Image (cartoon, rainbow, N blue to C red):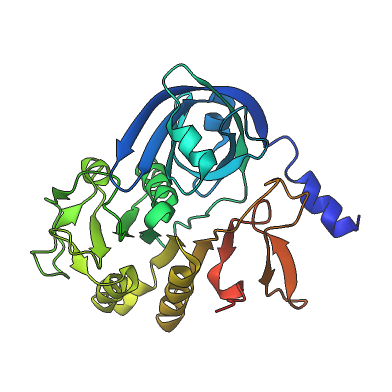
Length: 298
């Protein structure tokens, strides 16, 4: 092992825990989407926006499943997921009181700067959870944080739509559907879709974000940073949008994972560094990367 690899491995020691979690609640939403709340005190205490867990979905499955943490409070975490195979189907069938082995929190989190308090949070599909986590984190921090969440989905959203009472003067007033949880926290949020849901912007999240960014003054833009999670094509478009406005942008990448702790390197992606391009592991070197350093493969 090289000295660099050794240092990278050591920085994850003592920060990832294994514990037998307990299912507290499972909420089902249209489109085979679920939010599961798991009591996992050690993971909840160490979790940060952008980190994820590797869950043992059932005793019959040897492979775990990686899921972003949507919320972490007290002694529990929330995970949002869509059924895409047997593992998550089995996870969705868990009931309160069932035990689930939790490995986490894993990964490098998003980092927010007080010099850029206007935080644009862009989440697509199952990329919504880390954006909710950032919003939850910022509302608990001191300072003049001004988050705006723009969330997109082509499936029904995994929450009931609500008309927002938080004004968005940069947008047509008929586009006012929001995520109730963010609304209750006082976090402005607008939704984008091509599926025609009531009160939602008809287009991509990047189109809606572009409309907001275009409404800002030069001074406002100097105080703005972009954070995103979602499908790779969406993240590439977000990175291009941020570059056009000359804004710092962090993205949480989605990749297939086997071990999720850096051993197999099956989730490696190409990243630009001052010393040249290198392969880095999404699980422990990410999942959050500077969008300008990602070598997009599309």
